Length: 253
Image 1: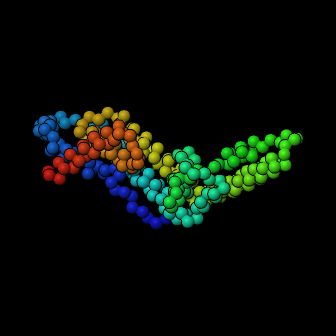
Image 2 (image 1 turned 90 degrees about the vertical axis):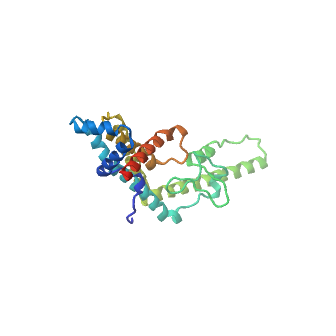
Image 3 (image 1 turned 120 degrees about the vertical axis):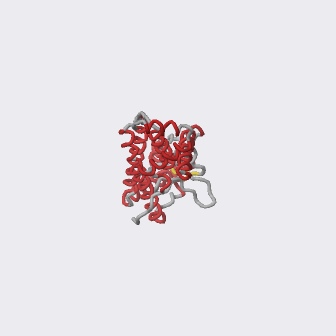
């Protein structure tokens, strides 16, 4: 896989940059004078060292998750033309979140000019075959012919479905997509756990507030849900405001 640059916007902030932004935040704050006086008197508070330690891990955790996502994108692009469309025999129109046709990365696959299709799984196809019951002894020839045709069609669709789902499972395996998605899930959990740990640590200075704002902003940019709930944006918007204020203060200092 080629080296792919990780999106810098979502990375954690190095400690030296955080200190520069902290100075900017102090310069932009009306409390800057009080902080200066306290420092001169030798009684400036010291930030919680565990919070600082966790904050310094944020950049690597974010980079690991974003690299895992880039790997998924690379595999999806490499295997796009080898991924089969579901045969028409096992698809229905108007698929939804649970049964819509998907690509090798698990994203919805919409065919040109069509709505999302529903792909019937093996369990559904097998259940249809399992509904077969013997006809009554006095069933007409026409009824027997329709039943035989229905059963043959159901069995053929089951065979096609088994072959399709087996092939797509094989491609996810040999392409490395299953492992890549597992790595991304693990990296996402590690990042989430780290941000949770940062938010649980007590902060004692403005540096602690900056670390927490940085953690929220990094997580929000890394996860980037397409349709977030409005309330989910509030913390990220607050964090972005804090970081912007600190950056502007650092630039003007």
